[in-house]
Length: 113
Length: 114
Image (cartoon, rainbow over all chains, first blue to last red; front, side, top):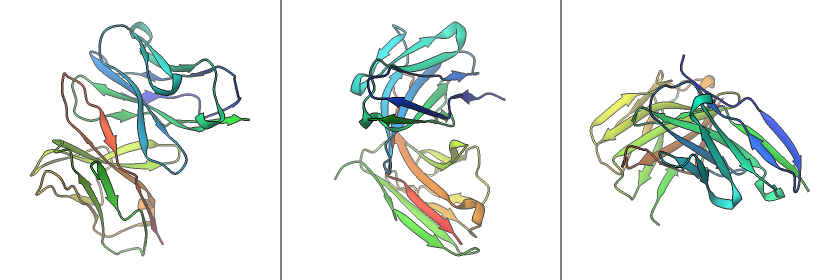
């Protein structure tokens, strides 16, 4: 079955450490890719998205993600995390012009001060 | 305030009761969605709607009913609530353009079925 995979379920980092969260998908053809963040007790907010062009996209709060088509991946990165980045991060895929998003299971990030 | 709002934010109900979760958006987005969020499953699509009076099933529609008589409202009804429907429910809306879909989410409704 087609899917979106986030293999890291819970990541714990110290402040200033670098972050990379993996996201792989299995949909073929054209895809649009998203990372959403959910801070504790809040709703999902868009961090960044990719739909065409240069494969490295920059989002809010210093996050970036790289689309590697050959690897079906869209990993999220941040060079130096802060305590306020503690949240759950969801990768989502909009495949082949479909009108809804398919989400990964999420990665919980805990940043220790 | 403009945006997408859900009500109630929290709800406790008994097994077998009918429950309706409300969702209202002020952007006139054509698409609206209902997701449920559960540990280990992420977000799963229950139903979505492409426009008023057009709805379609998502990944986990069983036990739920939706309607969309007006563009701005997309209520979700649990006809006879079960404990397995205890979850956090998110409504979202989007306005597809340029071949991509960015969804805007409501604050969520935490539903507990006892």
